[in-house]
Image (cartoon, rainbow over all chains, first blue to last red; front, side):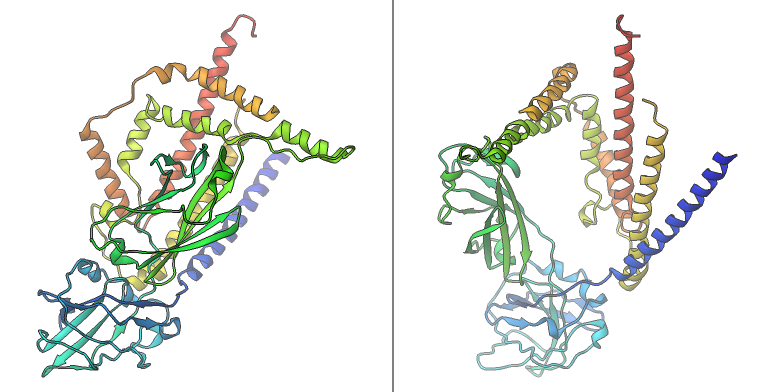
Amino acid sequence: MQQITKKRVTERYNCIILGVLTLLVGVFGLCNTTQALTSYDIHDYAIVSYDSNSSSILNGEPTTYTSTHIVMDSNQYSISSEWFFGDTYKNYQNQTFNGHYLFLDTTDDNAYPPPARGGKRGTVLESGGVNITGLVDGNYFVYAYNSFDYLFFTIENGLITETGNDFLSPPQEEDNFIASFFLPDDTPIQTGYDYIGENFNAIKISLDGTNFAGLYDTFRIRVYKDGELLGTKEIPITVSCTTCNFAEITLDDFSLNFLEYSNYYFNFSMDSILINSLEKNFTLSFNLVGNSIIYDECTNGDFFCYIKNAFRWAFFVPPSTFNQFIELKDLLANKAPFGYITEIYNSLGTITNDENNKVFILEEVTPITNNIFNPIRTALVWLLYFAFALALFNRFKNIEI
Amino acid sequence: MILTALINTIFGVIYLVTSPLRLLPNVTLSSGFSVAMQTVGGYLSSLNDILPVDTILTLLGVYLTIELAYLSYKLIMWLIKRFPTQS
């Protein structure tokens, strides 16, 4: 009887905890729908014909200009709205230049639509050196190659009028590259712990992506060792092709003496952050893990020093000891019966929001998605984790060993 | 040194137990099966915008792994108990 009462009480507590957590998760999901913006600027923009009545891009060769940067400041625009997440710009990333000229001035501070919906009204001006030859009367769409901003303008009687609005989107944080590391002789270095032998004085970083020249002007590489900044190097992107899949950077002029660390294990990692639409900061980090035990030099009678070294001898585990498990796991992943699971896993691919993986795309209304579906989805995720934890707890409680 | 020896011993046991598996050739499935699974993944990916399919699959994977590990443990214990010296 007591046990039954205890069980009921426990179930009641579980319900209360579940309820509170659900509420918290829901509130967190609702509050977590905004994101911070940073300042950035745009350049390399294309001009294409735009039909404002049908809100569509008209066919025809775009004209572009690559000179004056339009500097945007985070104060000039606010958080996103449905204006900022359209897909149409994606179709114009590879348009060609043909040398028409246009200066764009965005100093006008008339906000439209209202700040709640984001965006800033910009004024498209003609000024010295403007050449709009080839642009007939009509509406035009300006697409910035290196960002996701755009604006509209109209030409009437051969002059640009102030009817254009710029709708500024926040910088995109997604990356389209894969960073990997090599020794000078092109031997791959594993990300994470890897053993570096003798006789190397440089590390090559390979960026496997697409169209770097179109996306960024500069790679800024910061090299850290054990959390300490060793140096920074800026590398201008000079690759001019649009389908370059490979960019290679050598760090031998980085004031780094890798020979000093020969025969050691390193933990390599690479992170990046989009500073603005022109600069991409990369951070190359490595921690010296060490292959052999480094003992302190103890003075005579330094008891604690001896103890410390003894503990090092007893409990230091080189990374290769753990790596052998990973190697075995990789080997077994392709053998039966695990190989079948691996095959299915690989075939299923990653369930992501990448539209290339999708069989169909659900139509969405962005405000409804952001304010209703996304919080519900977030709450469901946390509920699933919580339910899984409970199920696991019950399973372990009743397990027979 | 103590921890290293312990970990190496565990690895040695696992290496020995998995010897028959390591001798097997790599698994290959027909391309039709892979295409079918990719299609399934495509549909699930579409639904993933609304329902957290990725989370469900991840948790399912973790749960199955735990259950498989438990089953393997029981099988090994059952085998050990077959030895004459074990009761």
